[in-house]
Length: 321
Image (cartoon, rainbow, N blue to C red; front, side, top):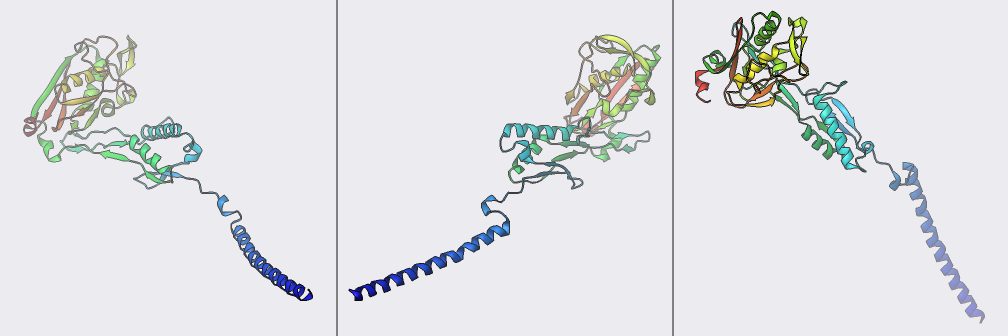
């Protein structure tokens, strides 16, 4: 019996020694995990990700003009509300607000001076709002830079054609006025002079308010009767609508697309009913686009009791109408 007790005791000792060695090996690995946690300060699964940021870049200056943080604008929780916010941002960037000047610019058309030289205007500038919204939504997942999609459209005509643009009258219209109304007639004369010798290339946009500019005393305009809310009242620049209405009846004989046109609230007499185009600087405008492939030159002829507006082009181009 003593012999077997010794053998059992020896075996138990060996087993226990083996367990202690295995336990010791397992305990050696534990500090390694603790060291990794100490290096980061947090367990790896708790490390916070950097917030997503979208930066809008002006392509002409390469400068960041606006920063968007999608998470703060409910990108992950309310996509509909987020898209509406981005659409409003795009609209404000394009068209401007009371405190922010927009990127959009109307085309200022080229014209001829008294010697027949070209006086350069400025191109049409458009920020494509829908494209910008799509780019921002795509970038809102992972962040990044988004370049503003801006189109710059120059007037489309060949300068070599300019000396010949007055060869053929392709459209004309005349209205009449009372020569005794000196203030009103002066306003007609000034506004007619402002659109004289303006070149309208193929695809170009014409804006009466942009071409003529402000109708104020500083520009030489005088008090005269004008229609406001179905009443005749005195105002600086009264009579300018006769110029814009005469222009409409002339250009209506050509292939154009009307962008903006408004009627007077009362019959005006110098054009048939419904054939007018009322304007107000800073408000109502008369705008159209030349949808033909022919460039035009506007000529205005002011007399003591009439205004004639002609659209002219070269003999070569007139055959394409």
